[in-house]
Amino acid sequence: MRVYPKFILSATDAAHFPAPSAPEIAFLGRSNVGKSSLINALLGSKQAHVSSTPGRTRAINFFSITDKPERQQAQMIFADLPGYGYAKISKSISAEWPKFINPYLAERPTLALCICLVDSTIPPQPSDIQLIEYLQSRERSLLVIGTKADRLSGNERVKAMNLLRKGLNVDGLLFCSAKTGAGMSELWQTIQSAASEK
Ligand SMILES: Nc1nc2c(ncn2[C@@H]2O[C@H](COP(=O)(O)OP(=O)(O)OP(=O)(O)O)[C@@H](O)[C@H]2O)c(=O)[nH]1
Ligand SMILES: [Mg+2]
Image (cartoon, rainbow, N blue to C red; front, top):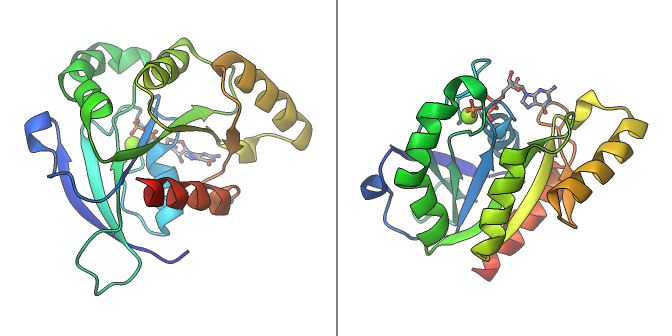
């Protein structure tokens, strides 16, 4: 799918969020799980900052998405959220979460879908379970993505899929790779149907 993304703003405070307009798709996950890479793969361009240093994304970065370059009004908005759960930065990030990330997840009226990224190459992590339980308690629509699936063989993929499904207590789980593009068309379909339902 060809889309035209535009960076809107970077917010470190709820007061700086853009006024709610188009349906929003939030990308969540532990630091280094591949949030920014997945956004870039979906958009087919380098919008989000990808880094080898975990914890690089410290703000919520908003991008507007249109299907035609001349269109002014966004059809949907992507929100790239700061990562959580990485030991070295967990203190500073966990201090920031309640301040503006919890209000975003709990109260944002236009939030249509939370895409929760988990690393498909490691077992379910407590911080992932915590986030998914929080979103479920808030009755948010969510989709869990196993990232970096290119690192697994076919056999390992089946094993990892079962382990994550059980450990995270979710039915649907989609494995993706920002590197090979695996899973991208299925992911776009889910995003579009969530945005059109909002
Ligand atoms: N093999 C492989 N590596 C990936 C994939 N996606 C991301 N990576 C690598 O994982 C690292 C982290 O990627 P980012 O996209 O910056 O991760 P992030 O979740 O945005 O990280 P923070 O912003 O720090 O929270 C980078 O070194 C990427 O190259 C993938 O699909 N396959
Ligand atoms: Mg990032």
